Image 1 (cartoon, helix red, strand yellow):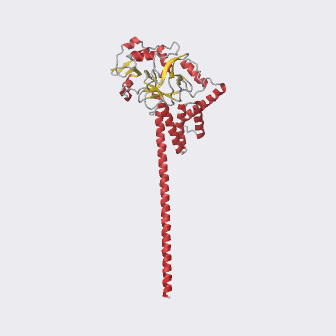
Image 2: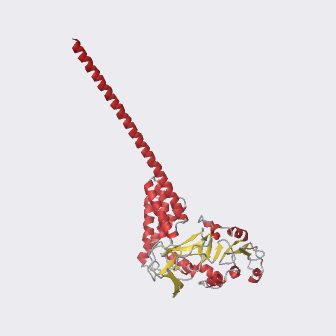
Length: 402
């Protein structure tokens, strides 16, 4: 993409005013969509023809679901971290902490400028409130990265551009509150994006006591400690001092080994492999010991298919039910992965029902055959009894004739 100055794009006419769609420049294929129409609380960045389709998505026909009220968190400054999110009361595992629409969203393949002119153009038509919220986000990036690109790089979360949770339909976005949650390698929340409402959500992955800082992860959780810290230092310019990253050396090695097992398990399953039962149990134990709730749910989902393959349908059904419950707890009832688990659950239940029907039909057939046999034997017995009576009658008659 060419580095067009703000003066050039400021005079670029819009292609639509309801909602507002503005190309970055007269020669650019990329542009900005502002929603809701007339309020401009959110900007979405994509190719201009695609933005016209985005504007027709069903999610815009209704306001986003309200975030829990009163809020169960507060924001305050944290030395060395900028702002942080804290629980203002006890929060239960699975509780929705915050739900909000992003301020700024861009599809992942959009090339932005390094000088910040693209981002400056994008936020130009945002509402004053949303622009102020965006500019209030932290910037951890050094020069020559500009302050606007820096805010995006520091705070970006994954955004889905469809309801399939597919890797080729991803984007990135930033939020007013979700971006205030700081990093932990065993986070107390799970971030989930709901395409149907176009909102980001944080769910508690464990009980969080009042006044404790609420955490999320920026790191690749299945990587070893050294690799996680390297990524965090490179991308976010800080040294992670979370409890997992400050474990004693022996404990840190054990943690790394468990996460390595989960990495191998994940790659094996993504490659189409069917894990063995021991492999499943090792991965399940590793996720539980590490406290990685989302990874445990994925192990259960993969395990349900593997167990079903070995024709242990009752166990497969149980694993699918556990997977669905786990995903719904940390992603809500419309979770894409939760729906996958529910489909498997229904499939396994159907197979079990069909198996039960066959067994019942076999049992009924066996009972019928047994009844017919008993009836036949009874008939034979009756015939023998009548024949014996006839012989006795003839013997009596013969005796009387003599």
